[in-house]
Length: 311
Length: 294
Image (tube, rainbow over all chains, first blue to last red; front, side, top):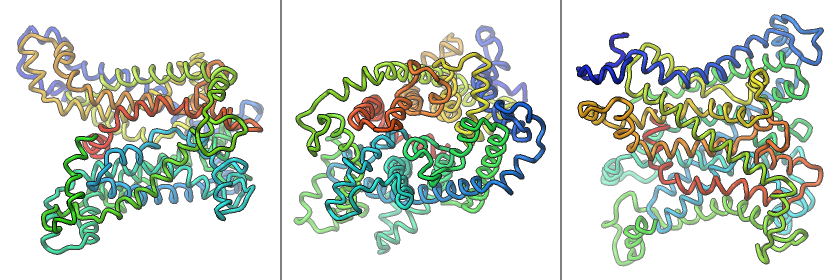
């Protein structure tokens, strides 16, 4: 294997061998900066999270620090209703967001994949919220949802909703309000990825289907959808992990409120560690979140038979 | 843009004169089925942008729904009183430093992955993929401790390093894909002509990687520009903070100054919009080759 290091090297004249003096070590030198950064700032933190999950560790209460065994985990599963509440909300958030983003993203991609006048401009505008940050999205929707001067006032003028409702501070409206705000910037992600994949469908297939008299719905179900399957599986998985982990939007838009109504598990973990300084417990919750993510990802890839079937 | 539209515009205009037979099969969608849903969705996309623009330029207290007469009072206020001038400089520093560091490190690693077969390669690739599942938000505490030990808390360097680390895996995978698309024989030809590996890389490979590097660099910049949590946690001095943190401060005060918030939001959006306009074409055509198919 070591001899195969520079496998693609042609029989080299002596001069070149001297200039690339260490072909065996060269690949390791090249990946060293990346590997060191990832070891130091991803692998080591992950291991330390696993370590602290078995410890009582709270810098503000040093007299209680020490080995906790599985105490943090039993605390979470047996005695912490907030853990279950936030976990349930996370699941609901991820399923609703990813489902709707996929649905609207797929529809949009199919539309802008057609040939029509103004397509380039239409695409640019439709995709534009893609690069907007979570915090900026929050800022925009705070302006829109504001009860005094927001768009909601004008909706109330038109008979939708009532005056003076602050959509973000009412427990009955905060969930749909946050979902819509996140959809606004999340749909373009799916639309872009699906459009990219749509462009690689062979046009001949549609022509053949047309000759056979297949309706547009049938063409979609039997040609387009099977072709898109792998891209859809992969992008929904990446997006689900991302939506689960991302705290920017909810942190700034609702702060997890009102009354903890929109606190996801990562937000709860951040509060536990940053505000309550309960690092041991936060580490245990983080470990649980890791395991859940990993388990769900594996199950999802298995169930969807990712990459398994011929197109 | 215009040239792309022109040829396809013709069949639409002449439609009544021509029976459907001559048009291509995949082109046979009634126009209203395109324009109606697209129009509705565009309303949803554009009204929020219009709303923030409106609040940013209309005088305080105005309830006009039109953005004129425009005023720059909110921009001046947010730039000086609310320190967005400082935040802007910090954000540019973080964004550009992350761009450079990510691109250089990922270029080296990506070259190794694309051109060599070495013992740890499979393990390294696996680690790159697994790291996609590691949420930065959940590693805040250990990361904070590491930066505290390195005495980097409250310095922009900590944010640059943290952003770079979480950008690296995807950037490296993308770049190694781009390098694989450059024929190895071109490099070999340069060696035969007497170039060493580095010179051959610089003269032959690097120019062909330019579009890919622009894309990867833009992603890194936009991501670092937008990201909020690391800056919030690792930077305590107000003079060190970045634009997303500034926006959050504006939002979380008791009585939100909506004009200032809108103006701050516009300032946050401008560089991203410029970068986005720059890379948009690549995004759509290039994703299928890179990100999705691996």
